[in-house]
Amino acid sequence: MTEQLNPFKIAQAQLDKAAEKLNLDSQMHAFLREPMRELSVSIPVKMDDGSTKTFKGFRIQYNDARGPTKGGIRFHPQETIDTVRALSAWMTWKCAVADIPFGGSKGGIICDTKQMSQGEIERLSRGYIDQIWSFIGPEKDIPAPDVYTNPQIMAWMMDEYSKIRGHNVPGIITGKPIPLGGSLGRGDATAMGVVYTIREAAKVLGIDLKGATVAIQGYGNAGYHLARLLTNQGCKIIAVTDSKGGISREDGLDWKATKEHKDRTGSVIGYPGTKQLTNEECLAVKCDFLVPAALENQITGKNASNIKAKIVAEAANGPVTPEADEILYKRGVFQIPDFLCNAGGVTVSYFEWVQNIYGYYWSEEEVYERLDKKMTKAFYDVYEMAKKEDVDNRTAAYMVAVNRVAEAVKLRGWI
Ligand code: GLU
Image (tube, rainbow, N blue to C red; front, side, top):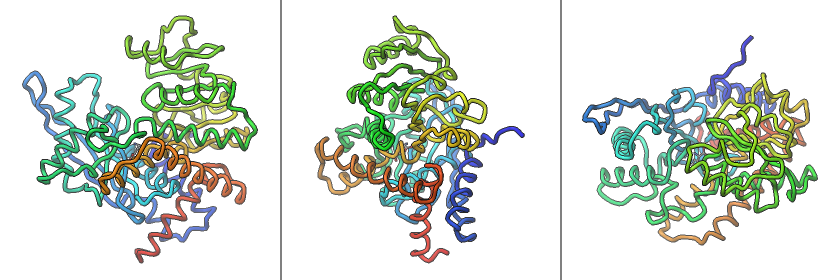
């Protein structure tokens, strides 16, 4: 049988596994398997050549039992409603495992921003808000950045929403630029959260961060901040890739020079003094920490037995399939599951939202200190559950999260 690669089917299968371990009530299980609300939109956008192009977009609110829904917006040519469904489910479990008072949601637009001008991207961003504004709100559903979206796009979206409402609404979206109510520390929050969870995983496995070797698949926002932060912790970055391929160097790569090379040439490939490698080869590099920081379905039943890392820290959403999970678990690879590992971004998004509502802003030190506390607590909640129930870390993370969401659903009297 060929492996199931539909991300929503995967998200449901992951939930099913945890539901069985939890002995979850069948009515609760059926409810938690599906999104609560879905919106599909068509966005007409005036292109620079005078033509009008229609883009397809989605916003899905998976579950709001624990609070307003929260989740990013992806701009991606291969976006599908099922990817957005899966990502909105993972946001629900992510907010629950991080114990922040949000449900989960996600948005997506099928588009290729690499082929679009800044003006076209701005008109698309504003057009998306024009279509979904009544569906979202600072106490309802709060978007944020994700793959191929950034603070400037958040600024346009916040501005468009505020214009429609007739007043400034900074709390409608997070990941904004600092002058518009963004939080200090949000830019590298996902990477920072990944580092905190790697630090704790290394501690329990007895691996010294100093001199530990790292391979990173994906040198986007999360990937390159991660290279910087792990280098500062004394780790050696021995391989990195981007969508075109990658590079390796045994005695370590300079994160900054690599980033400058990528900004200049469009790829990390060709940085002097390095060996070229493919994304597939990057995943198989012998290292202490392997960090998939790109897209879903990267480590599958086909290549999981090639992994030589001690820890797989899932900075991306959904990078490991269920078949690969089984193989990695049997081989003793310590996985930090995605919705625990990359929860730093949404946690600082929550801090940003709190600051917007208070109109009172925190220092960077305060943000990182609070983030560290949240991530460390979440890590040990999952680690203890895995030990107690003798399950893999992903199932344990689901068990922690599903318990919390199910409790809120019950308290509301929905089931
Ligand atoms: N897009 C990020 C994620 O997948 C952040 C979401 C947010 O900040 O709301 O976790």
